[in-house]
Length: 298
Image (cartoon, rainbow, N blue to C red; front, side, top):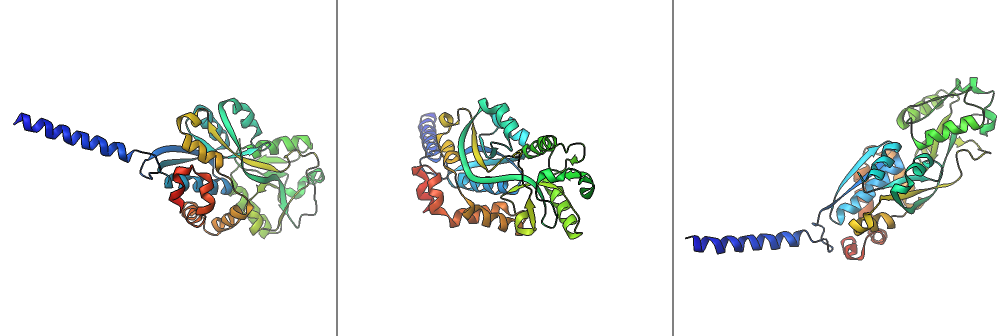
């Protein structure tokens, strides 16, 4: 009886191992299920981009975890290797504090989107056009500027800008969140009140509201910027496929801006809209993935 049981058992083990080995192959097999972690700041453009990259990773066989965090935590996670990468780094100005602090602990793969801008924004009916004109007009803005997350790169740039223009004593910078800032902006516009907020493009607020950037003659908030993809040290060696996707992810206004408007109209549907985007742009997305996965986007 034992002589029969052992060969049968061994045969079963060999078959199981062979099947397991076949299922774990990453040679274009969408069932290979490696894993990747991506950090992002929960702003509309970054949420859209991260969800699209997430869907593409899933299509080529990855388990994906996306982590919405603050800007400072995003860089800390990347520098420590807790996440594999991100597609949300605004450089050279918005994220400069954290970028410079951790730049020896990640790999910058370059721009995935170009032409971003951040600055001081007011409703178009406000009769000033430059940050330099804010001095002495604080009472018209209730002596405050409604900001976003404390510690966000943009918020740090705002603090520096208020100081450089000699406005820090006249204007109190209120730390809140993007959603609170936008709610305050909408409320002020509905009442035709003056309000000062930091904003950036691309953003759906420029679709919904009649608002404008104030000129920044000192370029304290920076000029046109780019959004970069960053990955942890060693990713190219440990997971060349993930590195390749992060490195080749790139798009422009023609693809992003319609998605910003769509997600503004359909809040909370970023993942669903990302799936639809990937399904309708397969030829474009083939450029983002290694050759062995291109057939998955036919």
